[in-house]
Image 1 (cartoon, rainbow, N blue to C red):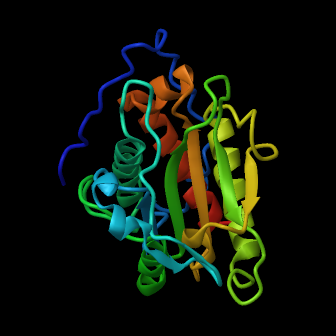
Image 2: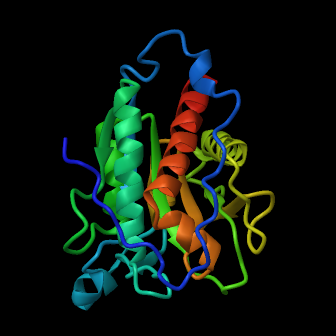
Length: 253
């Protein structure tokens, strides 16, 4: 397995904040074996892709986002110094993949590198559906106003014929993710959602999923503190540890 690549830290950010504290009581401790996720399939979706902006016709074409058209994909945001969201998402996915594999999970990614374009939002959901995944976790970072800080977890709203089969379980997954990240010391969003959870009906990756699915906005890349956390190996490791605890909690809940 390739070593996790590194990403440059924010040169203009203030001194990097201390890594979030590890949870004092992790759901992992509740597992009955050394491989609590054996036999479980987890699909990780690192949002966007590095070269999306070079393929405007491909990423702008409409796809079915759950009964309405939406563009295939977008470029995502970036830090003030130019570290792309797609790269942050990719590195977080790798850190989380390694932890889930160590817990016995079968982990699949919706893209295999931080290069090229896509896949489209409908295909990201389809990958999880074809795999028969026990859950889909889409990893993103936000691009809000510089003064806004914190993470939020997006869960699909109820759309008859599309999300009615996954909405309740997705809400339970969102709560597990929120609780684990709070226990790890991360602040919930102070600008969007309620207590770290937001409900949306316009996201094709969630609407097209037939398995429990949530999207994490791990922080605001335009905020100096969040950017410093998300562009550091230490920060991403802390987030990945929290997320792996959330997956165990959800699947053993």
